Length: 377
Ligand SMILES: Cc1ncc(COP(=O)(O)O)c(C=O)c1O
Image (cartoon, rainbow, N blue to C red; front, top):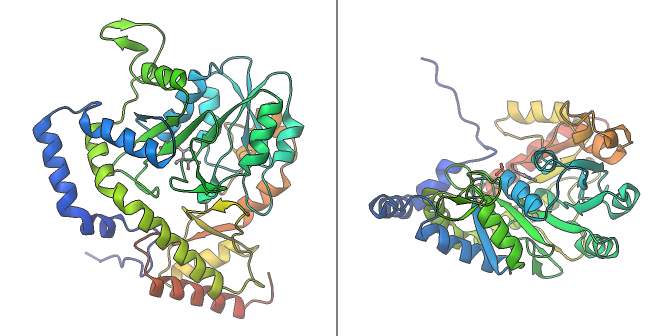
């Protein structure tokens, strides 16, 4: 059988991450197996405290995904039919689908051309009497402009649900993201900066009544066994995920620093006259879940890199208003020049704690070589 060569610079390399922690992960799994408390057990309770602490929040509620963290936060805030929720047009689809799952209407707003996060100016244009909440996304690991978005929310009495699924450990004006608004949503999808070995998510909040409501919603709307107060979900972070996440959590700070170091290396090594490099907003402590560059030659560059053993990815090839599922939203008829340009041009380069500086230098060399043979941007 023909052996398929693995790329010299993979986009993600979870086996390498797990190999280093294998003994600890296996010990945690054995402990979980022996304890046999598989749902909302001691590992989950401990993880909830640890993650809440990291986010500067009083409460953490482990759920089965980041998508459910968004959905349950919105439901806990009583967002539902007839309500509008403003979300960025350039994000993973779950930011908007969670709004629809809650029965409300997502209103798509364009993003900032420099940092790619929700534009406060665009949000202003979307406000109506029905607007109930804003969902800023800390895209690629960089905080949205929370000062201006929180001020807007205060003025118009709107809830703020942070989509921090890509940004655990990121900061805004020195404060961790997640607890800056009413609720913060985290994802532990395996490829996230802190990823499990399956799906997982969490809501963090400082508001006790929201925490209590999310706790009820994740457990079939129940506070005591076999008494159900409202329509809820089965959405609990399982103990196996919590145990593995707790092995990885002490590494997160170092891993995020390694991502920042690689971003610095790319910034120094890549030719900024040939492609647009990521910009960091003043006040944002970036954790580089992704390192996205922009070029009109995106597709050709990706093909070139693949032929040289470098894996890349496009997050995201379509803006939300271009997705069939969202195209019928009334707000999808607006113009989204920034989101459309990004969808055409962004290319994400390998930037994980497992990417070595040598590999990143090689990626940069291949990119520079590609442009040396092309006339311009
Ligand atoms: C910005 C954003 N929002 C929401 C989600 C949904 O998280 P999950 O995949 O855990 O449901 C993700 C992760 O894929 C994400 O990147």
